[in-house]
Image 1 (cartoon, rainbow, N blue to C red):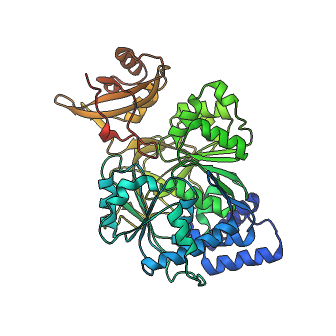
Image 2 (cartoon, rainbow, N blue to C red):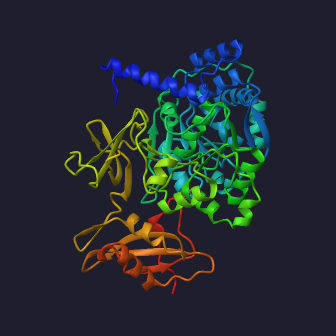
Image 3 (cartoon, rainbow, N blue to C red):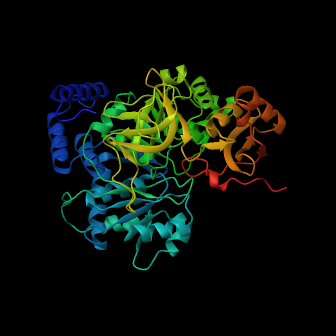
Length: 532
């Protein structure tokens, strides 16, 4: 990591950042008056979400910003609306703590931008959580205002006493229309953004992501992914998740046209790419799987030739899926690996994925990644260890006061993996998911990769279960391809052929579907054998 004591390195970093911004078109000359307004907005507001929107509106006020089922808004229109919404939030307190529970649509984006402009702390609620979980988060995070879609009526009716509710749609429009006649000024302090962990292995935790103005995160993305100014970006990944939120920030910085759909449907995604002439798609891996599974005649109905970039993150990308997607849609796939606590730490390009479909890629500039043993010492290439990373996106800690383990400025990501001689990272899975069976270490992800090569298997999840003799044994939960049958003994024989005997699942269950959260991660604690 380049530091202030390395002026030569700092100069190189600035030069690299400048080259990336020039390549993306961010430094493309424009009308002098608009460029002056853009720079003035950045100076006044900084590079927070509200500031990047204000600067984009100053430079390209008539550029199409948001497209959803309600129509379209320009950057200038949405800038004025979010100013009024930010002022209106003042009726709930000078800087209220706001929780947002919304699908992907303009109302959510406007709420996020307005909270940033207000300086309000923001709690991103997961649409897949139960009412009890949501209410518990409100109490834990001391939320004063909830902005939610009307479909979450049961949650809105259960709000704790004293928590104000604003529903998107008509109620939000009334709030904007009734905003006080005043000039919005930048907040005294930037609001914090609290993201919830995925909660696949327990209760979701609040990760405190202090706002860190700066251009380094954007530069790290542009170093690997060839985004351009004025992209047309379809964001299907949930905006409440770190991945979707980060790509929203990137799209705004690029003054992109952002296309949103409330719910994911694979054919609707292809239709949106075709009709909106989308150049970039932001998704989670299970969405890509559903797109690949569409019948060829359905895919052929929609022209996806404008698509230059498909960026995937949020859960593990199986190597078989990476290859299948690129075979179907071209070499446009980029895989980002990271976490709620660290954002992205490695990026795999299409060339990386063609060479090694199972790689998570390499660290972009400004990020350090290391594989350490249990004593905190680096291990040689090819050796499995614990994944640690450091960049300018590390969170400030959990709101409960807990923190992640740190080693020499590097934070534990909670995963196990290895790096090859080329510096490519390979993730084996969560360090607490590793199964020890008869004294042998087994990574469930390795077994899943092998099982997914069977043509009759559509999805797979492998977990460890208690065993009196071996300590733990493996159980496989499989979803069959439509019309196919899965033979448990054939699955075991296939695994035995490709992996060690202790990696063979003792139980093989065929289920209708795997329990997943809103970002597509398998909720392993919810896996249950089918009813007899």
